[in-house]
Image (cartoon, rainbow, N blue to C red; front, side):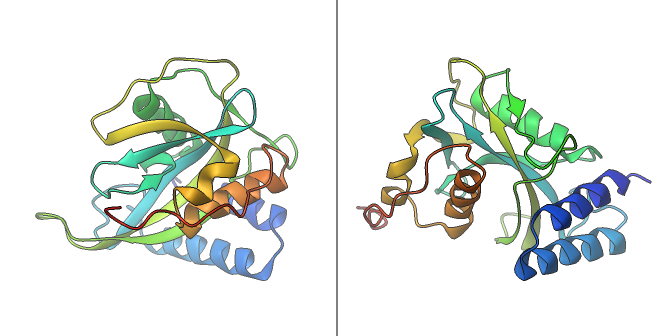
Amino acid sequence: MHRRHLHELLTRYAQAWPEPHEQALAKRFSAFAASHDDCLQRSCLVGHITASCWIVAPDRQHVLLTHHRKLQRWLQLGGHVDGEAEIELAALREAQEESGMQQFEFVRWAGAALVPLDLDVHPIPARGAEPRHEHWDVRFLLQVPFAQPLVLSEESNELRWLPVDELTALTDEDSVLRLARKAAQLGAHPPLSAGSPPPAAGG
């Protein structure tokens, strides 16, 4: 069953994050995957599984964000899984394609088996012939083992290593800041600073 690996990831996620809202979210993901045979493909028009990654620098003081060309927001790197049953491999592929870096290490923090850092469901607005739909994003924690040059992809306006304590000055996206909070909770980098509010749009 091509969704079996996804269900295993979701089971481990629910075991690792015992908070009620995390449990409810894992159940929502499982129900969505169970009810859509093509959930790993873009052909699932109501929504589909995506994969992204929170990337920590070798110094563990910086994280990598992209200013997304279509969405015009600072986000973690990631994208469609396009049928890849091992969701983490899709996240790794996206990290490599969107950053130009090739060497990454998955951070395993709840035992030998890999556990997602976060789950997130968010709407994607209609664009051209593509209707409005949802991305069911499975997110992983990656660390870069050594410095590597960045290469800007066509999907990004900019790539930037950002000090963790400056994140809140750049974005107020809760789904992004939640990744920072959870990674800090696991000791991957320093705690998120309260900082200053992000600049107004167009400012």
